[in-house]
Amino acid sequence: GAVVSQHPSWVICKSGTSVKIECRSLDFQATTMFWYRQFPKQSLMLMATSNEGSKATYEQGVEKDKFLINHASLTLSTLTVTSAHPEDSSFYICSARDRVSQGNEQFFGPGTRLTVL
Amino acid sequence: SQQGEEDPQALSIQEGENATMNCSYKTSINNLQWYRQNSGRGLVHLILIRSNEREKHSGRLRVTLDTSKKSSSLLITASRAADTASYFCATDEAGSARQLTFGSGTQLTVLP
Image (cartoon, rainbow over all chains, first blue to last red; front, side, top):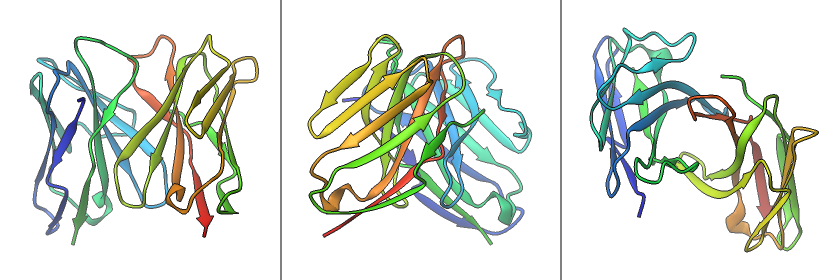
């Protein structure tokens, strides 16, 4: 149980285009999902906290107009990188917390590698 | 979000040896978690230790937590080549929105 999927697993796009990444909790409901970004050989940096039915909370330095987050249901959150540029190339990882247990553990998706040409 | 420090940044050992990684953090926590990440892959949750616990075991893993020093260690015993990966500690900070703050990570290489 407690599986989180991400789609796509990798994407290559041209500079200036927008890319949408989906994060799904497959066998549990998640009121809260988190989006992280990881540059090569670095740690995960939290970008935003996504709550179902409300606006996402962004970390300092993360542009909310560039990284659009939608958490429309208890099993799906999406991250859209708008007008992507090469510096947005990174590994994007989501995680979700189980609504029922509200436990301390977050379940992580496998990540999406974005390459902007 | 602030990151904790992990040391060493990189560790190379022979198969069968033990590997110890350390993590320090800065704030009060609810719990501390350790994750493994193989190159280019997602995170695998290894173990969670609560703030009122001092030591926890899971298979070949042993985690300690010293809240007075704001530090934790992960010991992998009898390492295998398959243990080669990056290891991250992550803190669930007290009073936060329950997001995790990750340490800088330790790259472990186990040589066959």
